Length: 323
Ligand code: UT7
Image (cartoon, rainbow, N blue to C red; front, side, top):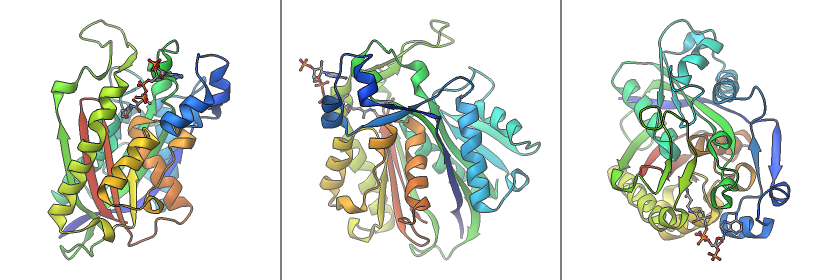
């Protein structure tokens, strides 16, 4: 049986760090409120010349170096983003060009904060279907560019950055002992699309628009939706929370992360948390967290790792994989 195995990982962050203290001087907020409600202490904000494509390129190059591969070795690039450089073409083809890759295919995937989980699931389907052998999966975002900096209920929450992994076709036995993606569960419910959205677009206003969120409404649904797809992943594979080595959740809010882990009986020392350092980087948050935890040796080859995300749409999903 063909499995999609993580061959390499990498990340890239903007140069500029913006602390809660710095925001206090520009927005009617406080470090205490932000830390208490979200766990965020700082975020990275893209400066001149830093875009979703440039950050994505940085993450891609780091993942290629980590894997010991070159762009010639890739068949496909999938970029998860809701903040593309242009309405079209896909920012993935911009990154393809920056990498000097003149073969294969590249496209963007839009599932907001669940984008990376959607992109990994899609890459896994390409690999298991025999359509690609190596897929570069990137999550890259510049949410700072769609924030309303006069809206304190949203502007303190988000940050910019990019992370990437390379998935490679490898032969497995078809058991949970295999390395690679073991199962993936995706969900969406468009009835909730006006709870977290951007109030612009090419076909409506002709403008880019700004992020709008009913935070309390999103919060209310988050833990239930996250536990739903995690339980579905456990059921599909016959695994249990006790067998997990690491939970790598989408990093939106420390309270949502802790609440989901508690409900599932996953101890907090098995949960990778980077929301304090990065804020909510939407589709980039999971690969940034993977890069942090695999980079410092916490996530090791053979570990059972669970990814989960929930966000705009609503969309939500999980991926269970053996690193
Ligand atoms: O990426 C996936 C999608 N995003 C999320 O998962 C986010 C989900 N939602 C949340 O994380 C939380 O709902 C927030 C962090 C956004 C807000 O936390 P909350 O505990 O739900 O706060 P709230 O919206 O109920 O607001 C509480 C108070 C309000 O004041 P009053 O009306 O009680 O007097 C707000 O005006 O906090 C006030 N407030 C702030 N105060 C200082 C809102 N934003 C700020 C701020 N600084 N930045």
